[in-house]
Length: 205
Length: 125
Image (cartoon, rainbow over all chains, first blue to last red; front, side, top):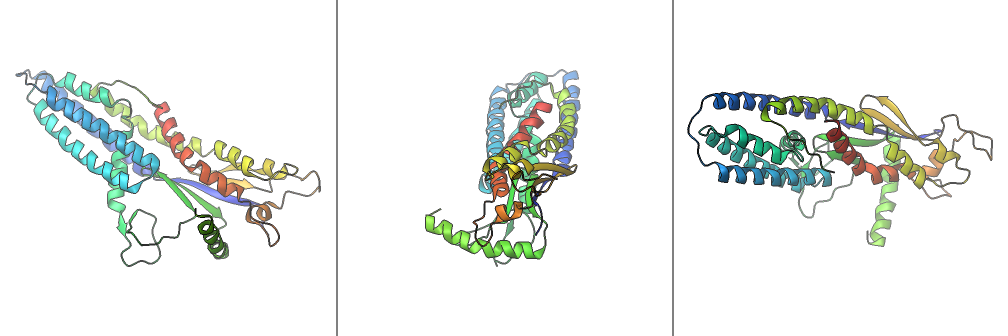
């Protein structure tokens, strides 16, 4: 028998998060350049306040929802938040179109950013998470073993045996895995799972 | 926890560029598994305390760590033997129920790890 028990803890998905941050940084730099260009060319002022406020509020709501969904690791909430983020992108695009016709470009853009500053660092993570969730949601219509780690659309009446333990923060996954990973260990665990499930069912857990 | 930082649009690109490094550093930092080790020691059954003392985190790579119990050169003061019974206590035996203290700690702390990572990322910016 082994002398020690060991669980390996691994963080994955850092590359995706870093790429999302880099892409967001590039977008910000491009936006900054565009705004600077607009600032230099004085033109007429237009009433942009209403559009700005709407965009700011919906963005704040979407970021808050996404953050909450990520922390609670609720796939349904993540998808819902993703839809809101998509709507925010549309509304920000509309705002930027309006801003192009205004001389109040800098102050309006800074107002948007200042409102987001409470959790602005979550935006690239949220977008990356959304993209990742969207691209990785899979169905288990015909049942069978789960061959790849990911999110699955499940329906009432379907049954899933939980894997050992996996938690995630947006695109970043923190995985716990018992070592060593020999087949005998997994078989032993499966043998013990039956009585555990029966005991939890008996307790009404 | 709330972080407030007011930026001009021109500064946002640079700040987001720093986010990559901040994410890597916070991931590395949570892999020290401090809270998980404390939690595992709290869940661990104690007789002499040798098994609880043997619980430790070992770094295995930039994005890898291991939560380990048993071995580590520790000696049980009562028997004078190495702490070689971690598996028996953790997984149980035919005459003794399992006390999966490592697994309990990981389940208890899994969301704490995620939240800590977010908090430390925010603090690094």
